[in-house]
Image (cartoon, rainbow, N blue to C red):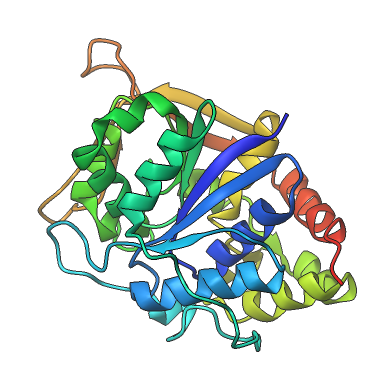
Length: 305
């Protein structure tokens, strides 16, 4: 039985890799892609989403979303993902156009029209999700859960306290975590453990056309160290398909929305401040070897003309 998902994303190198897995894995049914300003501006993230979907000849609607956060000033991550957000590979220029709906309209319509429930997979800032819940709270009952890349229980990657997606729009993150919808927080605590190794990256172009594309964009990703490259957003897809490889802990997550720790996700690790209540399953550990093996297996399974 396939899992129906909607991705809300800001491609971005690792977002493009996550889209690749979501488009091609037969256990996932990607119903809609919505875009948001994040790694680069929303016009660029929309183009990048269209390029990846077109690369695989997939028919998946794309709706452009929020151009800026709810309150705070927008800061992109072009220093990591390049000015285009997806450098390194020459995608065809006939990649199509987004549908004539806003992301919030498209999210509402797709969620309400879906038979059964859908899983939301936000891999950028949560602005579209917050606007959706504010304008159309009735959609919450149709959402099985949110598997969101973002946050950290320790050190951030945008500031010493904050992870980038939550930092980009902390007010939206607060709305999402207060929504009552089940949330899995896939944050830096695991994404910085499950780096795609240099050996795995080197193998990609030998596999197939998809591997060549992924290789060429990944080697242009600035988020790497001596052990490999962080594929943050891909961990959401890995979790959906192989939850047994990721350890989670139930806890309450609060979001800091001002001051020097703006964007920090504060986990009530000891269960001391919310009378035992929790609002998230927080990913705290991962089998990094299994992640690398799975990533390569996913690419090898992709069939292209």
